[in-house]
Image 1 (cartoon, rainbow, N blue to C red):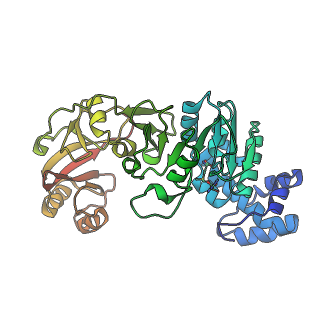
Image 2: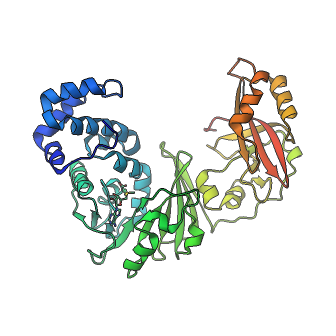
Amino acid sequence: MSSGYRFSAEDLDFLTSSVGDDLLAAAQARPLTDSSLLADLTGLRRSVGSRAQAVAETVRLRRKAVPKLGEQAARWLFTDEALQQATPWPVAQHRAARLAGHGVHDLTCSVGADLAALVPVCEPAIGSDLDPVRARMARHNLASLGVPAPVLVADALTVVSRGLLPYADPARREAGRRITSVDTLPSVADLDHVHSARLPVLRLPPGIDYEALGRPGEVEIVSLDGGAREAVLWPPELGVTSRRATVLSSTGAGFEVTSDDPDEVAKTVQPEHLVGEWLVDPDAAVVRAHLVRHYGCRHGLRQLDPHLAYLAGPRPAGVRAFRVLDSAAYSVATVTGWIRRDGTGTLEIKQRGTSVVPDELRKRMRPAMTKDTTVAHTLVVARIGDRPWAFWCRASESAP
Ligand SMILES: C[S@@+](CC[C@H](N)C(=O)[O-])C[C@H]1O[C@@H](n2cnc3c(N)ncnc32)[C@H](O)[C@@H]1O
C-alpha cells in the first residue's frame, strides 16, 4: 500500500459509521508497521473486507498525527498529504489566540487542524476546502472534538461568506530554494484580489520572500522547537508591528521579538577576545524575521559581524549556547590540533557564511578523534569580515 492512499466517498461512509469506528478501534491492536503491513492487511480483509486498506491507512496516520496534533488526533481522519500539511497544534493554538473574538472563515481548511483551534475561540468560525474528501474529514474531526462547525466544499477564489475575516493556508507548490507568492495554490495575488474587501490572514511557507510581496501589515515568523514553521501575513487591521518572531516550544516555553524592540547592540567584538564567553545562534524565527539585533539587544549580546546571525556574550536563559574554549582563524590544522589536545569523541560542526561542508569536514577529522563519545565539542565556523574564523566550543544543554 502506498502512503498516499486515496480515500473514496465509500471509504468515508464506512470509517464514519459506528461499525467502522469499532473496527478502527480493533485494528489499533495490530502492529501495522512497514514490515507487518502485508500480514496485517490479510488479517484485516477477513474482518473489514474491501475497506482493509482504508482502515490500515487511517490507523497508521492517526499514530503519526498524535505527536503533531495531540491525543485528539487519535480519533481523526486524514490523508497522508493532509497530515503533512496540517499546522502543528501548538502553532494552530497560537494563531487562534491572536484571532480570538473575530468571526473567521478558513478558506483552505483541509482536514481542519487550524479550524479545530479556531472554533472554540472565534465567533463564529467556518471552514471550506476545494477537496470534498478533506472537507468531509474536517467535519468528522471537529465533531469528534465536540466543536462542530460548518465546513463547505468551495473554491477559496469565490466569495461564499460575508462579514467574516478570511484566513488561508494555501497549499505549497514544489518550488526552488526561494519561494515566491506564486508558489502557493491559490496564489497570494489571487487571494488578495478576490478578498480585497477584507484582506485575508495568510499562512505561508517560512522561507517565503515576504519582503518581495510588499503586503501591508505584519509579518510573523513562527518557529516550533527550533524549526521555522510558517510566515503569517497579518493584514493591517490585525497587525501590531511590522515584523515579529514567535518562538514556540512543545514544552510551553516561548518568547517573542518584534521590530518595535530596541536594536542598538553593543559594538562588534573581536573574535580572538571571545574565549570564556558564550556564542548564541538565535532561533530560526528570529533570523528569518531579521530580528537578530533586536534579540541581541534584549539579552545584552554583541554581534560578531554585522552580517552574521551569531551573537556573543552572556547566555540567555533556556537557550542552547556554546562556551568558547578557543578561537583562531580557521584552518584544518588548527581544528585537528584542538581535537587531539582535548580528546574529542563527538564533534558537532556548525557553519555560517563559509564554504565549510560540516559532513565532509567531520569525515576528515575522524582519524584525529578518540572513541570516547562522551567527550563532545562543537566547532563553529563563521565568516567574520572577509575570512572564516573557527570557535572551539562546549555546548550547553538547552535548559539553563
Ligand atoms: C496547506 S493545506 C491547509 C492545511 C490546514 N490549514 C490545516 O491545518 O489542516 C491547503 C489546502 O488548500 C486546499 N486548496 C487548494 N486550492 C484551493 C482552492 N482554490 N480553494 C480552496 N481550497 C484549496 C487544498 O485542498 C488543501 O487542503
